[in-house]
Image 1 (cartoon, rainbow, N blue to C red):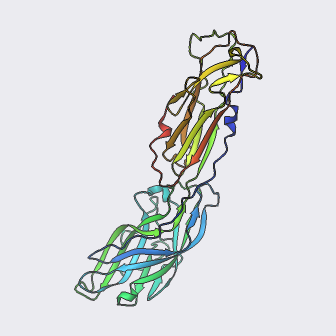
Image 2 (cartoon, one colour; image 1 turned 180 degrees about the vertical axis):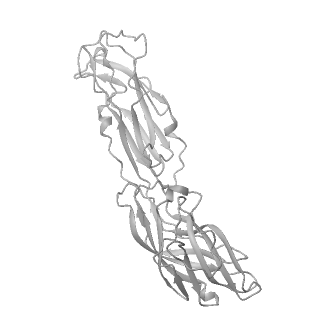
Image 3 (cartoon, helix red, strand yellow; image 1 turned 90 degrees about the vertical axis):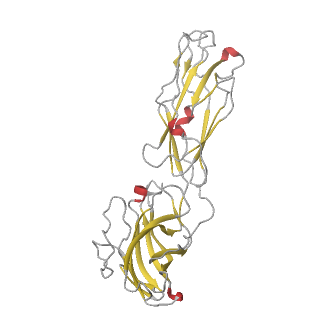
Length: 362
């Protein structure tokens, strides 16, 4: 009897690969030329906070000191009062839902209202309809930050605001070196040709926090051993395809791009203990990520894949083996096997990945 029972049995023990953090952190957005009023965040004085999407504790109570710069209109005058709140940008969208951004204090020639309120509105929350009239005050049901600029010269354009940033665990954020948010604001102009005007608007990516979202992943094998069962009665050339279960797959969850490599210890031959002749080995082929390997092509399977995402479904990478040889004429044994090694590695956040590896079929 020839029992093929342990092909790639080590696939069940794929270990999770540790997260990878790309070096360097961008800390600010550039000021924008404008003819109205408003704000832009210039820089953050803080060491980069690190968010591991697989850490069950998330990123809690991280304090970031940020320089907020008011934008003054052309024709003289200054922004005297600024109301603003934050929303996800187009890149993060609903994946940022659950983040909290809380202003705590201010320094410089300005006063602050709204301390202790979460001024971030996810896509699942109803944001304020307007930041005007400029005299409105923040409340627990109308959350925003209100800055009174008390100086009227260029030296008082910058103020330092201390924020508390909380990020819950398991957010499906893209791997990145910063987190950017859109600002929605209302402002009042004092002096100059626009004196007394109240304007409102928004600026994309106006506030940039130095929060690194790690390029991290988890990988596991889902299914049964790649087992052909009893093949002793199958002719040397199988009259019909004999394949392993098509439901078997490698499951990947990742916040960034990743690399997948697969090799065969025996060159896609299942061998019994002490194998010495061709009657002690059974050839097979393997299909994985759109590639087919067999004893005639034993080169490594190697793909650079787009991010799998962090939802429970992630990306499923199907894997299937097909017999080339039947068991008839082979030396009977129950331990014919080969060992497949799959290595799944997270890549730097800005890696350009050509393959949607979750889109391959058998």
